[in-house]
Picture (cartoon, rainbow, N blue to C red):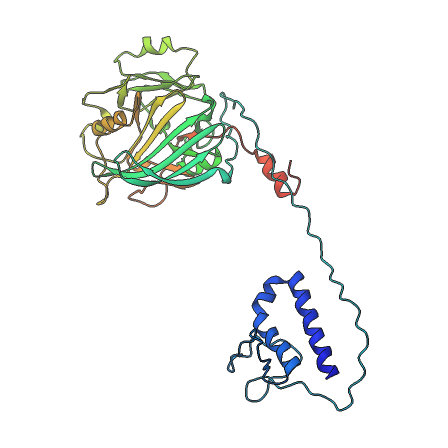
Length: 401
């Protein structure tokens, strides 16, 4: 009986140790140890009268077997062997449970305060913070309840959703930024080179919260007025409608045949200039349908458009097309939608296979072909309060600041 008592004490010590050091293992093996204690105290069968912590083991499964008894031939557990003259028990020292201290967690670097990004180069924005992304169910423009994906910090707010409008699939991003430098253009390689890159890859390079394709400026062989990050790439305006973004982040759309006067009035205040079109909304008015080189046939197609809806507040739209589920939309029908969504000025960018919206490093819209088309440029919206590459490097090295 003394040996049985000793064995029971050992089992109890094991239970106490597991409680402190390995609660997960204790939970997994609790049934077995209850059985073991019962057998030690009450003999084979473990009948303790009112003891209710014991479950019968599966006779066909000994995979969970732990202990100092050997499996019996019938698949159960044999009772421990008891000698006629067991040795006298010695006093057991109190169990000492040593907890191994864990390393002090490294603090994440604090987000930087809102900064003004350089507006005369193609440097990236700060790195978006993962915890600032979330989703919520809300009513869309069509009135249907859809899921909105959101990014929000002190310098930028972006919400992205997808809905069907007039039989076409629209991917819509509303953006509000704290400073115009957060609206940035990206190029595939050195400015002016013929290199190409997908919009998603350019967005990743720029740490963009959201991005769309640009006007594919290297494809403008004819006269055009093109500016990126304040640098003039082509300076002879042609017949195409122009979108000019000034250093305050405001849109100016020029549709006049002779654009020289309008551009001269903006001289010294041109941050970005795009040459594609047509203009969709000008000073709150929908443009009239007219012949235009990029919509000569007036057919439905994949589209990319950008509009301004307020001070430092913008709307990005990409429409799926050339598919059974979404044929696309004409530029003139798109103009009406952009106006209905509140755009004061709106402009059509390169569409067709170039049409792309990127969110969290992935393309949002659906193309008729897989992957992004390689193009020359894109428009990116970035955060100016977050982590730099150096912050991330330090955090990974355990040197978080």
